[in-house]
Image 1 (cartoon, helix red, strand yellow):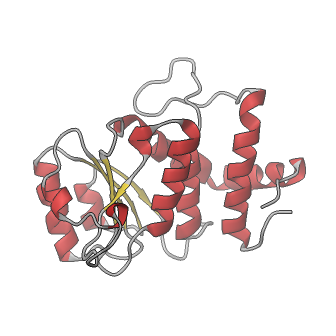
Image 2 (tube, helix red, strand yellow):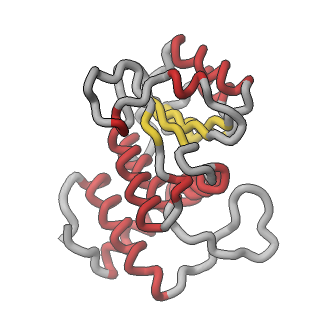
Length: 215
């Protein structure tokens, strides 16, 4: 994939600034990053019919590039096939055994089915912190500590593009801010040395938004 030129970066930033998605996804991603500090403690799960392969891969890349082992997700599968490699053979028993040090990211492009909601309710009772990237699902969001709803038909970006945005923001440096409180620190401009990584992340996001490789 080629790099983005300055005009493309500026255009994408302008698009996101108009919608507020840059701020919302960064808030959600920073909260996830700060919570997920335990290696192998960030669990990611989808629905029985849709597993979050792309989100898992994006977060794994960001964890590696940023040197953040706690951000490297463990994919939970509803029915891992016999003989699957170790990283693809973790079943829902791992969620049943989750504890306070664990963080769960739920990626649900549709309404969360009852079996998922039941497991989330049990995980929350054991102290697991739950994040939800969803399609404006009230039942799922009621169980989550942090949620990022992507409303069908009204969001400026697709659900897949939102996953790119969250993953990219999770790998960004924690820039200090004056007087910022809570999970999310307001971002300061990145140092020059950080622009190369930011540009490559924006290039991947532009692919997701436009459907064509950036030249």
